[in-house]
Structure formats: structure tokens, C-alpha cells
Image (tube, rainbow, N blue to C red; front, side, top):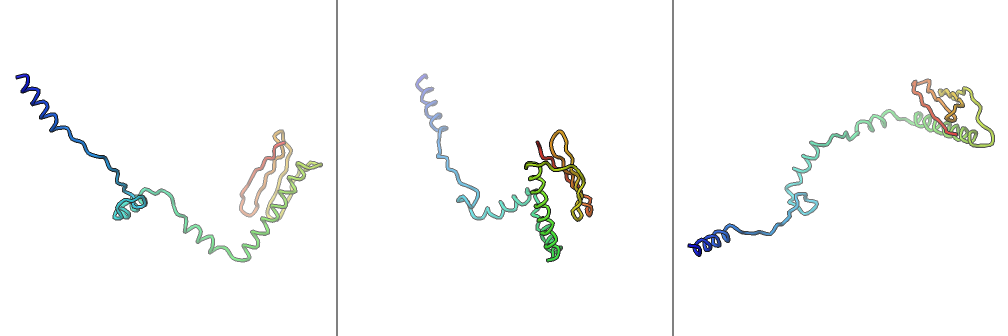
Amino acid sequence: MKTIFILMITVFGSLSLSAQQLVYKPINPAFGGDTFNYQWLLSSANAQNQFDDGKDDYRSLLDDMNSLGSFTDSLNRQILSQLSQKLFEDQFGDRPLTAGNYTFGSLFLEVNQTSQGLLINILDTNTGQQTEIVIPK
């Protein structure tokens, strides 16, 4: 009886044990997967995409831009660049920048000396936008 029991365990045990080799097959066609998966992966990615491509924003910017507007923007950038260079030279140069109010076209600058350093408030009188710059000591 003992022999029959061992024989049955051996027979049934060997039948239930089987092994197979694990093989990885990629899904993405870029890494060797099936090319029919491409459309499914693309539609799945587009459905999960929460970002706007912003194409409409760029088109509206280009429509609004003309050569006179471009020239005005370029001139404003140059003036602001020279102004900021002058402010930095005055702050870090031999003589400090004096506190006061300055007007450059549509920009109103208020310069104050504080305990943190030089405080510059810039107000665009056309749009109402305001910027505060602190140059530390």
C-alpha cells in the first residue's frame, strides 16, 4: 500500500508540474511590438492628454502683430534694457541711485531705498500692470 501511494504521488505530481519559458513581447510598435497597436496607443494617449497644444494662441498673436507693433515692442525692450543696466550700474557702481519717481513713456517707476535693498515699483499706465523688483544690498 505504501508503494502504491508513493507511485500515485509521483505520477500525479509529475503530471501537474509543467514549466514554460517566459517571453516578453512589447506592445509599443516603436519597441518591436505589433504595428496594429499604434492607433490604439495613440488614441489612448490623446484621451489622457490634459495639455492644450496652444496652436490657437500662437495664431492670434501672429494675426495681431504688424510691423509697427513689432517696432514699438522692440523699442520698448531696448529702453527697458538700457534703464535696467543704468539702475544696476548706479546701485552697484561708485554712486548709489537716488530715490524718487521716474517716467519713461507709459512706464512710471518709483525707486525707494529699504532695509532689504533697492525697491523698484514699475507701473505700466496703459495696461495697469505693476511689477516690483528688489535689488538686495
